[in-house]
Figure (cartoon, rainbow, N blue to C red):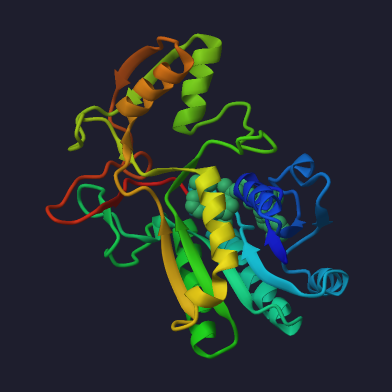
Length: 307
Ligand SMILES: NC(=O)c1ccc[n+]([C@@H]2O[C@H](COP(=O)([O-])OP(=O)(O)OC[C@H]3O[C@@H](n4cnc5c(N)ncnc54)[C@H](O)[C@@H]3O)[C@@H](O)[C@H]2O)c1
């Protein structure tokens, strides 16, 4: 079986491609390398170009007849950039997705798995996100995800295609075989900051210790990117069963309990054997590390998420 993975040279798409290969599913990658790395697509069927390029999608479909599912990971993902340049983000994430879907459909590819985000949920006053919460995205980036979800829902209802939207919570980690991962020289995400503090010997600052969480530090629902990738493999393998009754399905990909920053630091120190210089700092702005709080009888899904 073959799958098309847009954004397959990026952090998540490349990991999904590795998981597909391991499961005997052949990935075909379409990526413009705007943030992705060519080395992450090395040795794989790789087409460099834009998801909105109709002739390129036609060529891929002609070269690889019988692509069973398109996994649509390609997107611009930086929340603050989306606030600064919403038109660019709506064009990149919504406009181009529409072109892609139309061109896929024209080529007979009508099963779609979409990289959505838990940021489509509205955080309540404590920043908690529950699975039952309504979709109230709070940034242009998150709105692009919610809009594409709506497009997929409408198009599925009309019988044009079938789709599974996977709402990722906080992907973290890398492919266990190190075929790809997050590769930033100066990372701003919490695991990257821990690694930087460990490597360079600097302090690690916990931003905010008075959140209403079990230990006061921010809490997020981290999901290992390899688990996330495995979920995509299952979604590909079970696509027809999952969409048999409802042509459009939304599935949350998270752990459900979350990890606090303090717990993450403790786990990091346990695994590395190092003792970090841990300090505490001011509570960060609400849009960034948002904590999750419990609500009696309801399952926690997540804290806030950057993308
Ligand atoms: N990383 C997260 O925390 C997170 C959380 C929730 C959802 N997501 C979603 O997961 C998906 C993948 O995110 P990621 O973290 O791997 O980001 P990434 O930037 O590493 O990957 C995105 C990939 O898409 C490619 N791309 C972007 N625009 C393109 C276009 N027009 N044509 C072709 N290729 C294009 C980039 O070159 C890159 O390789 C995105 O849709 C993102 O919204 C990510």
